Image (cartoon, rainbow, N blue to C red; front, side):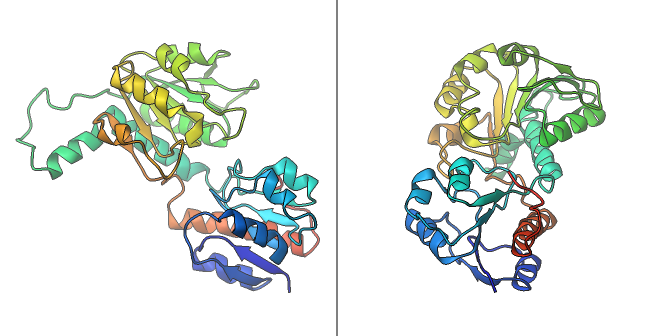
Length: 317
C-alpha cells in the first residue's frame, strides 16, 4: 500500500476515503511544514497532500535528489507555494482542486464588499464596545453598493462568480482586467489597462492567482488611480497587494476602505491595518465551509487515487 502524508488534518470523510487506498499519515500540527519536514516528506512518502504555506521550493527538491514522492496533490486551487517547474524537473507531478472553491470564495468576496462599503465591522465594534447611543440619520454612512460599478481583477472561475453575484444580485455594472481576452456570459467590459480600470470603478476586487506574475500587482500606482470613495477587496493571495502601499493609501485617505481575507505575510497582519476603522479583516475564510472543505479534500484524494491506479490525473497543474 502506497504511503500518503496529509500535512494538515482534513474533515473525516476525506480521511476515510484516503485510508481506503493508502497507508495514511495525518500530521497533527496545524502550522505549515518546516523545511526539514518538507525534505523528509519527499523521502518518506509516495504521495504528499500539502496545502497553503507548505513551501515546496526549488531548494527543497534539490535536497532530495532521488525522491520517493511522485505526486504533490495540493489541497487548494492556488499552488504558488509549490514550485511546479522544479517539481516537474524532480519527476514529481502536481495537482490542485479547482472548481470546488469557486462559490465559497466568491461568497466571501461579496461579504467583504458589503462589510467595507457599509462599514459593518466598524459598526459591530462600536456596538460591542458599548458606544452605540442609538440610531440617527448620519451615523456610519457608507457606500450604497447597488447600481455601482465593480472592477474585477482576474476573470477566471472565481472572478466570474463574483461578477455574476454583483451584476445579477446588486445590479452592478461590471468592468474587468484579464491578462488575455475573455468572453463572459453576462454584460461586462474588458479594460486593457489595470490603472484605467481602477479609476473607473467604485469597488475593485482582486481575484487573480498568486505567483511571480501577480506579485505586488496592486501597488501605489493602482491605488492612486482609484477614486477617493472607492473600496478595495482582496480574496486572491496576500502578496498580490503591496501592503505598505495599501497602508499609506488608507492613512492618506486616497481610498475609502478595504476588505481583506488574505495578507502579504500571512498570518502576520500589520498593526496599522488592525488599528484602522475603515479596514475589514477576515482570517482567510475563503473556503471555510465544511461541505466545501470536504469537496476540496475529496478532489485532492481523487487526484492521489488516480495516480495510485496509474490513471490520468484529473487536475494536473
